[in-house]
Length: 298
Ligand SMILES: C[S@@+](CC[C@H](N)C(=O)[O-])C[C@H]1O[C@@H](n2cnc3c(N)ncnc32)[C@H](O)[C@@H]1O
Image (cartoon, rainbow, N blue to C red):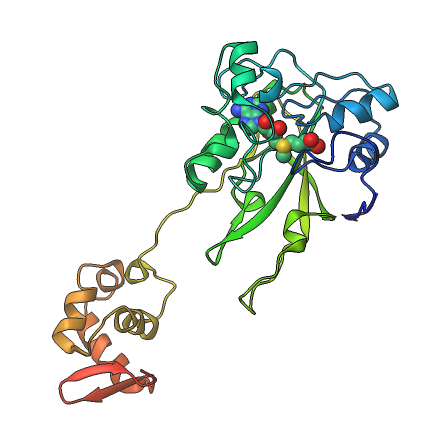
């Protein structure tokens, strides 16, 4: 196995009609590469991991919402040594009531799979919250010394990249990231209007190892907003330019003072008003017209 893998032929594992299913060849390679004695999958979808494990005589536990297991509300029934996890791709492919009937699950298992189906999260932030809950729950259930293999992808909507790899929690030791080329996707048949659209043709496989059980390292991505006027790494030129870029009209000196006053950049410099004036005069990115200022390029 190398850090880039490609399986044009997915093998006779799982069901190719189950959207977002993965190639069993990847799972075969992981079992061989990491010499796995067992492998479980609690979002097994069409049963790819189970089919590979059966063919290779590897024991494991195979669950899914479509088999009556809800990761969001139910306990994981074991402490496995190795886990393969292939979560939904946000809401790009909806599973419950698309790949299987919600009515069937209700009558067989007594709960509605649509409620906690990760692919039905209300938006990306809700999906990330649920994905990370499932990630940490599975990691907690892993035996010390074990591994969790997470297969995931990125997708783009309205010019924004939704990256599972960037937003997923990374508990334990990050041992490897493998790029997996994608084949036979529904999106392969699409043509894209925008000429700067770069089609995504790969997925990621992240390998997490559990070296410690109680106190574990963790990387938990958080998204915040930053105000440039509070950033001590931005120069005065950048702060004044940012204020102008977000303004719909030319700004007088008083307007600029009002916009930046009270922010960290000013608190760090008692002579900040003089600094603003100097910034406007010495930088040719600013242009004066009467008593108002704009960006020279505007
Ligand atoms: C990308 S698919 C897995 C595909 C699988 N690797 C295959 O090859 O067929 C993701 C799966 O997550 C399941 N799922 C979504 N939310 C879940 C939840 N709360 N609990 C358990 N399974 C869930 C879906 O039913 C779906 O089968």
